[in-house]
Amino acid sequence: MGSLLVQLLLLFQPDSLQMNELINAVSKNPAVVEQRLQSDTELRHRLEFKKKWETLVEAVEGFAAEYNDGKGQVWPEKKAAALREAMKALEQSEPRLRKDIAR
Image 1 (cartoon, one colour):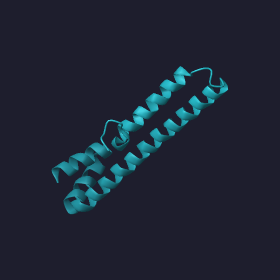
Image 2: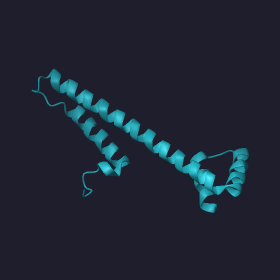
Image 3: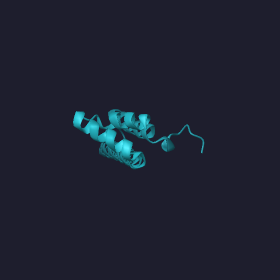
């Protein structure tokens, strides 16, 4: 129960009234609270992935637009750097996308 309570406190950062409610919930039914915590963690992970995916899509669109405007004659270095950073951020948040993991 102790580690679950610590996780909840870190996750929600409750005020004193919410703290009492969390302690009561954990002591009464820790399995339900654990399930809710897992669900919230998965939701946060999905939202983070979605945000990073959208950033990557925007970076690809920006790079493609500038590259195509130059008819392939100009390399848009700033857009390429933004694209690399967006891909790197996505890879870091989703280990299955990393290149260095043997498949």
